[in-house]
Image (cartoon, rainbow, N blue to C red; front, top):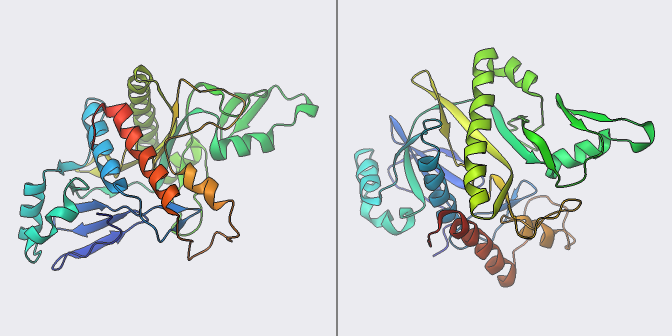
Length: 310
């Protein structure tokens, strides 16, 4: 069963994202990860089988693994308990939603999200590589490049490991693309104390997860975290270390100096770039072969990191 939309009668939608449907339960939230997939900020009409389950189960896996580093927003992911929660919140006949919610949903506390994306990069790739190239001019003899307040050697190549993981936050754009900013600018937005807590927590979670992943032959190139304030404490919220929020590479084939194959939706992006599509809504339908290969990428990421099957 592919789930691309949800509609739980009796519950109020708190928010609808590119992937998640979030329902307001009063003093808590129901987060449902659908099988929707987006590319170039456009949600595509074709769903990816099990994608929402992979995102949810991977987040649950990492929440448990890094729980000693920072608290998270999870209340429960048990389906029976979820049905009980939504029933008390007014859902009509909760049992009818069991198959839709099972494995892809969780009840969370209501936290106040911070207004920045917390990105940690261990390797030079993606938008950071593009910005680095724009700043790096070999002819002018620069030995250093300052990228959003982070000083890097001037001779790095694509996908090269950073001298140390760096915190490179971004704004949260309601429309269009997020904008990369410096840690200093992030502190100006959220306040000095919270800004420093966000940086320290992001780097600590990334290190803990990267060390674990390395033992399983996976490189976490970079990742995006979301944090929120709950009862005056900073906690980890949303999803964490999934193929949608992170770039996972196979350490066995890693080779700096070029783009790396990854366990995420890059496979879909690469296919879309072969089409005559202007990257605006509506997006094109995906062929069965692309859907199947993308689904397997997501499942393999979960399998490699958790040691479990869905």
